[in-house]
Image (cartoon, rainbow, N blue to C red):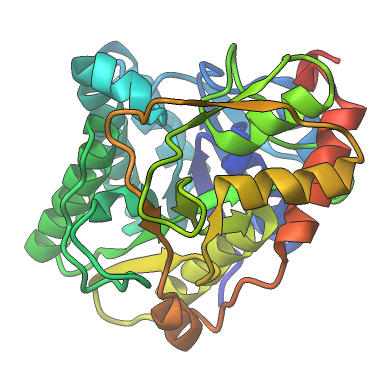
Length: 345
């Protein structure tokens, strides 16, 4: 295998920063493209610190048509072997309120990424998709053969991008693509140096719990306690972000070994579901802090329960999630307690 030269769109973000550390530690060279809308420049410094390696950075907005030429030219100069696309907006509730913005940014940025890689002759792409593409119609654990029926605009942008990439691969058999449908990323790098750094009020459960535990927020609102689940709260498959990062590296290795084109959907998850109340209890143990909560009405677009069948990733990528819910909580708390204000600390 030749040394990988990878474009990482959204590489300064929560998942992207951990992916970058994993790839750099494996000897890859990286060009990160990020506009820092949902991330912070300090993440770049900490990526380099943890990996002991340099990275190239292009601060740009993939969804801005006026920046397309500069992005394509920069990617061509870098001479990549492939790319990972993690850039985009990611809040379910916000997507329900602002669907047009989500379609424009998420789909526009993915298309520019694909066009830039094609212009550079590097037709190998790992796309950051989501389990939200499955919706409510499938039995758990959900396999890749399950029905795609997303219940919100965020999930639909992910599904439509998957379809777009498959159409591109169908038209040009030189393309090798994996759509990684991952479940709920949580945790942080064990060093506590990089982690989830949400702007404003967190949209996801774990960063909100962490901010309550560290004293930044008074109380956790749990949306829905009348679901048909073990304790009435929503059940999700939580996966440690470092396991997720290893999954991206494994996907790139797999694509690099393929002589023929392909476009695959692939789950990354643990195969176990935990309720919101179980997650709160685990974080309380890890932090030794009280986490007061109150129940609130269900949110539009949320499903009651979903967890992964990840056998395909195990069989094709030789990948399996290793870290437990306790590991996730301990690492997330280490990040939050050492960086109470995120990268602004």
